[in-house]
Length: 157
Image (cartoon, rainbow, N blue to C red; front, top):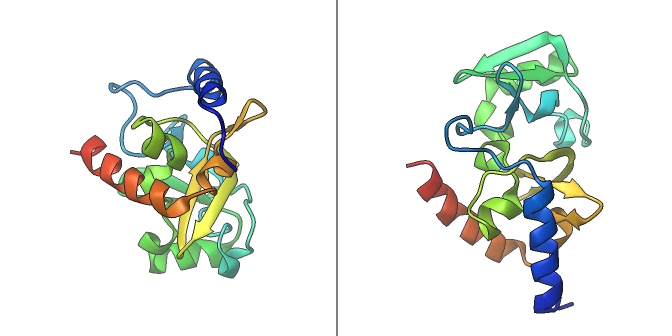
């Protein structure tokens, strides 16, 4: 289903006006809250089938710091799985909105409950009633992944 150019312009306007776009001084490579807590405090393993298969908040008492970023876990088993293979569970693009990285070449906050697991990778998305970026991304994920990967390489230089 094709969206008209006018609708795209309106949605982008709403998106840019309503989204919290990180500035370059404070953005870093990872989407974090507060004291460098990744994914809004959600358990990165919980998204995957072996960790429960749905977003779940982690607990403060199950913190683990990986490369200077704090991850929280809902269970000891998820914490152990992450420690054994963190790269398997880390969100793509540092947890920033996959759609925005590809479409806008910008780091934009996410709704930790808006996600896709594709080819064993966790993609997170901005989601508000005006704009569900996961829905748009899902129309052509291969193209969004290719553009996102190219943009991410530039953003992380």
